[in-house]
Length: 193
View (cartoon, rainbow, N blue to C red):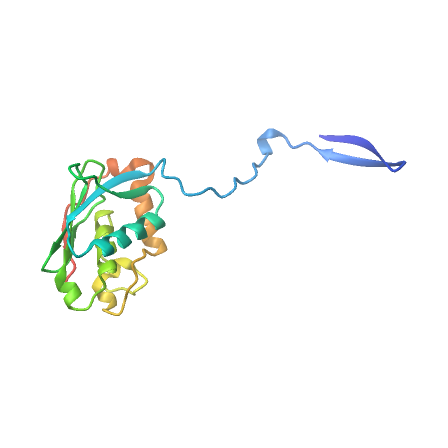
């Protein structure tokens, strides 16, 4: 519907036509980009008290996941509280339970020294193994740009950031609390050469 409006401009008559858009056809203006919100995120607690020597790598690996996915957040469990993810240091090859781990569930990450002895990056190992807990299988062989390619990317690979496809898969696993309804795979994946 057209509505004519007459406005005077310095003694001159100017006609302006405004078009009314029916509500059914109206398109809302896009919302401004909002900061990442943890309000809807699934919170998973981890206990790394038995992973001596891996503290910095675990902190960086957790930060990588928290900085790259929105609907699941990893937080360090307070001493004496239950944690869904148990992280331990071992002398063998890294391995982890394949998730997605649910709130109240249980998954294990074993950060194996053998991979470090062979020259692999500790932070990449920690982020990769946590990725298994979040429901990602290995993508071997694969390029360094894929976090879940693990050791197949070679010892020079230091990438500890999930790529867009890996991020999307974790987002899908935890969308709207989906992990609470998705059974944990439960297999233990060993990341040997």
